[in-house]
Amino acid sequence: GAVVSQHPSWVICKSGTSVKIECRSLDFQATTMFWYRQFPKQSLMLMATSNEGSKATYEQGVEKDKFLINHASLTLSTLTVTSAHPEDSSFYICSVRGENYGYTFGSGTRLTVV
Amino acid sequence: DAKTTQPPSMDCAEGRAANLPCNHSTISGNEYVYWYRQIHSQGPQYIIHGLKNNETNEMASLIITEDRKSSTLILPHATLRDTAVYYCIVRVAIIIQGAQKLVFGQGTRLTINP
Image 1 (spheres, helix red, strand yellow):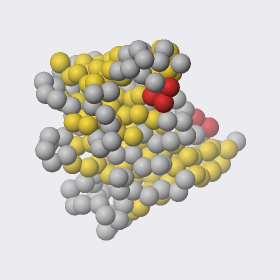
Image 2: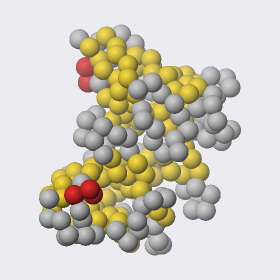
Image 3: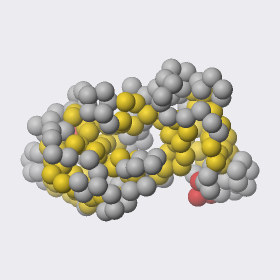
Image 4: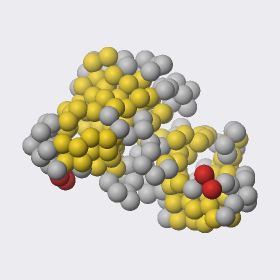
């Protein structure tokens, strides 16, 4: 499967600021990436599908203006949490759909908004 | 919504086989069954996937019933490091984008006891 690098692994930011999380596919040209969010003791919730060169597809209930996704190249997708608030504190995970069995996940980013 | 049902938790003794069940009674003919696991504060790790035949790799075996309405993941010789949350996922198709997303259910928290 693809090798996926997610950065940063953790970040603390002040309420009202924006935070950018990067997801890189190191050995595979990924036309599709996925972004998930996970709250403590809960399962992963799909937020959006990131498509290279086009707009992301957001799941129902996810605010596209708050969670900005950019997939400008075949190796990089970014998730920007804009005007972050404490309730946005969560574990954010990206996934790359590669070839063969296809789905490799990043190591996740722990976001804490204070 | 996730299309799978799993028991919330299971225990298994170290060295024994761990058998994790999953029900997916509404699975379609062209949908795959995937298994992932997540160790605390990490991204999910791929284990195995299958369509209708039983599958085996270096990590586990996947047994799919003939009617495909359920499956069992088998870890043949469980170790303490196999303690994790195990997710059974049916791959859902995104019709518009042509890509296929993974929707996670609640998973089974497997604890391997010494």
